[in-house]
Amino acid sequence: MSSKIVSSLQEAIEKCGLKDGMSISFHHHLRNGDYVINAVLDAIAQMGIKDLHVNASSLFDVHAPMIGHIKNGVVTSIETDYMGSILGKAISEGLMEKPVIFRTHGGRPSAIESGESHIDVAFVAAPAADKMGNANGIYGESACGSLGYAVSDARCADKTVVITDNLMDYPLSPAPIEETCVDYVVVMDKIGDPKGIVSGTTKITRDPVGLKIAENAAKVIEHSGLLVDGFSFQTGAGGASLAVTKYLKEIMREKGVKGSFGLGGITGYMVEMMEEGFFEKLMDVQCFDLTAVESIRKNPNHIEVSASRYASPTARSAAVDSLDVVILGATQIDTQFNVNVHTDSNGYIMGGSGGHSDTAAGAKLTMIVAPLYRARLPIVMEHVTCVSTPGSTVDVLVTQKGIAVNPARPELKQRLLDAHLPVVDIEDLLKLCDEIVGRPEPVAFGDKVVAKVVYRDGTVIDEIHNVL
Image (cartoon, rainbow, N blue to C red; front, side):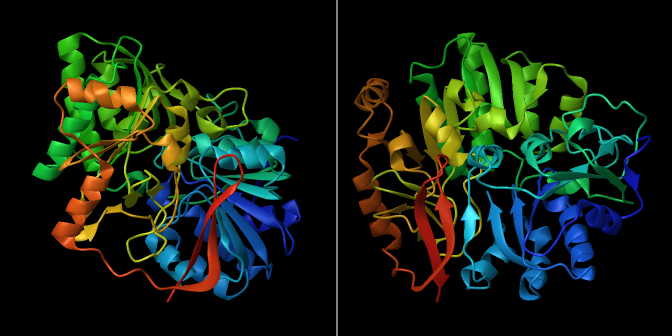
């Protein structure tokens, strides 16, 4: 075969033998700038194919047109690690008959590779590809960096279609998606807008409350006993999480500590820390901003990793197993340290675990950074609305009103007390939260299960019901 290029999405779909009732998959590295999912579903709808299972590593607000395809019967079930608020609201109100299956970023490749989540046709959005399907995310106008979440899909699907807007000479290198996995290549005018890969806020917060939380979080790391040469670290892309990185960098500078690697979704701030010598390497499963995209293209110490290597609990090993500290956020956290990142305070789906529970399980120190309340809605609860990450894997909560340590970590609590940090019991944070904003009325849910939250080991740890 001299080329795997076909003339259109429709031709690729037809050649793959897609039929009613099959499963298709997508990855999310173009995030809210992705054009591919909508284009593929539109093509499938035009061909009259229905009753499909969509397995997507994440779904964003740009994918709201999927609501129409659910209503017209093209999509009848969804499996994902994260869901944006527009689609999430429709699902929460009972749009689908079958419950959405929420997995984790590590649990998803594990389920795909084991055959539990079978994929008939995988569609891979590739910012660069050659005629035989070798593909990467580092070249072209739509460059998004790592393609880590697409690797298991491409390798395990019965058929794999690479969709690109940047056809390059054979053989393309590097090729995290290899031609050995690819059946057809489709060239589109545009696969997405790279500006849309930016994850929410990727700037350090200026909010005094957020800065206080971040400063205390950095001090927890400093006094945890883990901040030594070879230290490894992951944080998110939110303003407060990035502020933790800022304060941590200064502490590492003062102490002369050099870390081994930064992990996860990588931002420009982590790139800066590597370039300034605070970390030797970055292990990147997805790029959170365009600075990270440029870095992974140019710097050999900025390493692309698959979702399986990142966090799969059934791989022979995964990077999260070597992680010292992870900084995570929360919609809610309860007095048992269970964390909710799936629903908002009104019970509507607006997120998902992603790598939250994977990194919490793997890291030596799992820290939640969150204000006591947001917009007069409590963050600390007696019971979270949805358990995304079990409290047994969470060590510390840092708020503007104090630091709560899981009772299962008495030695850590003593370290922080010895450092004169403002350690309090989580029950006292709940009481204070009640005093400031009051305890809201419970959310009214119906009897219909609209989503199941599947932990990284494949067990269902919670169910989300329809909002009344």
